[in-house]
Image (cartoon, rainbow, N blue to C red; front, side, top):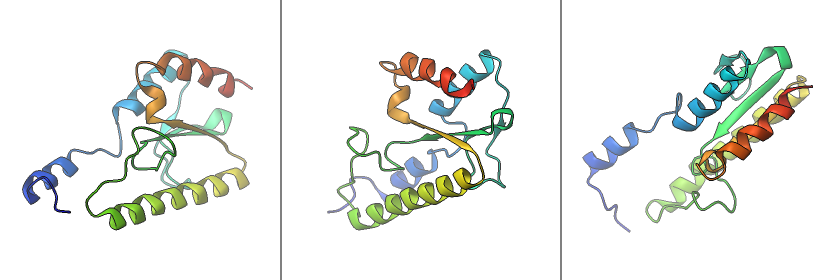
Length: 138
């Protein structure tokens, strides 16, 4: 099946996709800061380069895009109809890399919190952020 966009349009669309400072990430960061938590961002020497690192609590937070990280059963994870095999390989690699990073972080004594993009939509944002606080205070 051919792409519905021209090569130039598709290239532009893909160039607009961010890996850092995404809207879901900013929502969590603002919430944490407002509640007195201080953190580091995208620490390169930690496996998986976590989105948010709370060194004081030895905790990392990954904020996963439902599409890019293959969120099972989520309405935002739809396999594209074009270049399906390529996309499945790409997403599968992301899932594998996530799992390897989690194993390495856990073995180094880090606590891992994973938040999905769909959990930060308006309908569930407050619940998700409210549940986040107890998991940080220990």
